[in-house]
Structure formats: C-alpha cells, structure tokens
Image (cartoon, rainbow, N blue to C red):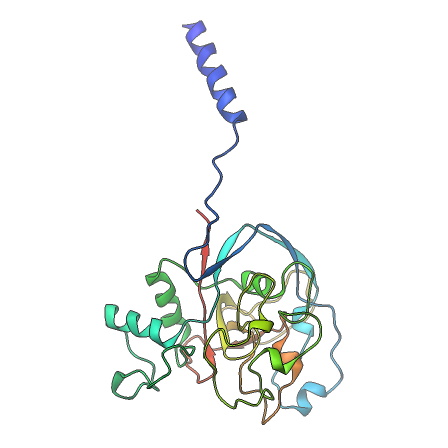
Amino acid sequence: MILRHNRLSFLVFVLLLLPACPKDQTPPEGMALIPSSGFLMGSDKVDTEGKGTEFGTIKPWYVDEHPQHKVFLPGYFMDKSEVTIGAYKRFVDATGSRAPENWQSGRVPAGRENYPVTFVNWYDADRFCRWQGKRLPTEAEWEKAARGTDGRDYPWGNDFDPAKANTGDSGFGDLTPVKSFEAGKSPYGIYDMAGNVWEWTADWYKPYPGSDYVSENFGEKVKVIRGGSWGGIGHYAIPYFYRTSYRFYINPDGAFPDAGFRCAKGIK
C-alpha cells in the first residue's frame, strides 16, 4: 500500500514538472494576436490651463489618464477592423435584434456594407460580440492593441498625421470603409484605432490606480469609448482626441452616428 502511494506521488510530481500544453495562438479569421506582455497605459502629460474649455470639451485632455502605469495582459485576439454594417446585418437577421436607427425600414444603406456600423448602443454591441463568441475589449486591451509596448501616442507613432486616419481634417467629411488606411495600422496590424468611429469598450469610466483626479462621472454610470471619430470638432481635428491613451465616455444606452465598436477574444 505504501509502495503504491509512493509510486502515485512520484507520478504526480513528474506530471507537475511537464510543461503545460501551449495554447493555440492562431488568430481566428479577421483577428490579430496581441501577445502576452506588459505595456505602458495612460500618460503623465499635463493639461494646458483652459485649453479644453476653449474647444468646448467636457473634460480635461490628460489628467484622467494619470498616472501612466505598467499593465501586464495575457495574450488575446482583437478584430483587425471595426464591425461593419454588413456583419451587423447578419446579426440582426439571425437574432431578430433591432436595426440601427439610420437603416431606413431596417434596410442597409446602399453601398455601405463595408463601412463601420454606427447607432449601436453598448448593450447591442455587447450582444453582437457574444453572438460571435467574442466580447467587447477592456479599456486596457484596447489601448495595448492601439499603441503596442513602446508607449506611442498614435497607432503609427508619436506624430499626428491626418493622412493616416479618418479624422476631422482628413478631408472626407464622412465615414470611410474599414481598412482604408494601411499606413495608419497599429503595431499589431489593426486598422482604424484612431479616427473613423469612436469604439465602445467593456469598462465603466473609473480612475486609474493611484490617480488623484476626481470626476462626478466616475463609477458605474458611463462606459469608456476610445479612438476618436471622423467628425472632429467643426471642420478640423484636435490631435489630442486621437491619441492611443485618450479616454472619453458616453451613456451605455446612447447610440450615435460616430460611435461603433470592434470585438476581442481570449486565448483558450
């Protein structure tokens, strides 16, 4: 009996020493792998006194990104593009979900199947992702996918360039089809993480660990959106809105003409 117990203990010990079976890191179709690693989240940049108010923004540009901090994330997958109207139409047809309000009589706008879907609130975006076996990305996952591990300000680098994204002064004055800006991809090959549409994340708007900024909007009230949109303010873009660390927020019940989303997925 003792001998059998010793053999069993030895077998368990050997199994513990064996390496775990590696997870399949092959991205599903239309997704990119974001490898396991740490990255710099947020920023320590300082707001210019009164500048946000001058442009009519409702919150500071930088202070809610404080302090910049290191975040470690296990590997995950992220959609390479924003969810398109065509993909969302398949979801509506399959589930009987409501169509976005800009689809007249529930019909897809002609010729815009490859444009990002808009007028989708947080709850419907969440349902779509779950229907696909995915989920909305966390705020940290979104930021890492956009900026990589070198702390860059924009998906393509540290200098704002309206030729690399659909922003307020890029000259389009409307949405553009997904994957239109090859030079604007993030380090992981992901498109439109600056401009085109704001994107829902999974998270409520809350302070970062160690932050001393106080906002009446913190808590489980509004959801974080990221990335900026084609609209800008007026006919030009404020580069601050398109930074990889910029945070904004809207009511999860809201559906807007310049807000869309993309999905993420954990690695099993």
